[in-house]
Image 1 (cartoon, rainbow, N blue to C red):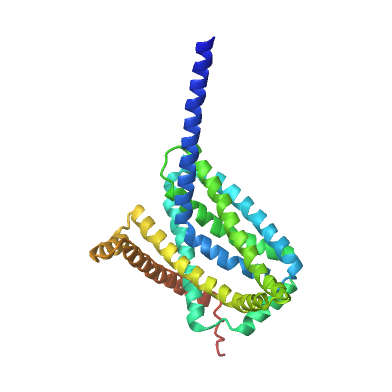
Image 2: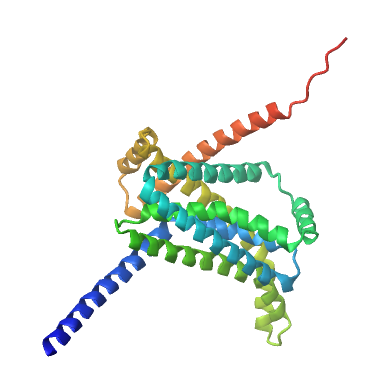
Length: 314
């Protein structure tokens, strides 16, 4: 009886060690996968606050929560879908990542074009805010959740590609952890950002002069913070999109762009951080080129589609 008892304890200890190792694998894998998807997350955090601008301050956090809930539902379906595909059709992932990289490069190039062309004026932004105040919360949430769906697919696909384990269960656990971490990180940041100006106004009403100064600084700084996030998001889209395209073009047999960038990077003797900057910059340039091509193609299609017929003279 005592031998059986100690054997049971030994089995429990072995299982506990295995569970601890699995938890450690999940934690390490989630950290690596999250780092790979950081560029898309930055863009998601930069894009999301626009949906609550113009709302009543009392409704900002409830709307952010509704979008967060929709994001979690999105990621739940995405995780199930990509886990099934990883079992039955793993060959499709490079093509899906190429589509996602194309989307990111296109969005980044479009933002760059608008920024260079100065098409977004302050008056236009004010009109958008007024329009949003007339729009129902349900429409705002639906629009935000649709945008989140695209970005969430990218986050989860990039995360899956970064997972270095053959265990189906560990991969699933890592994706679940990444989905929760990313959602909390993005929409927690959004909630803080959209309420920061309210915090500033609250501090301005406090007695110590230092708090009034801090409050004034926060109120004045937030428009610049949002502008900075927009620029960071654009750069992140081009960098991440370009890198995804380079790597996955090589996966499907078009290795020349990746080999060119890799050759340039390795030809320059520099510390690791500088090498990473060079590689990221070249990836962003490739993203700009790819996105510009997509923009041009779509512009031609739109012009042909909506070209007015020429009236023939009798």
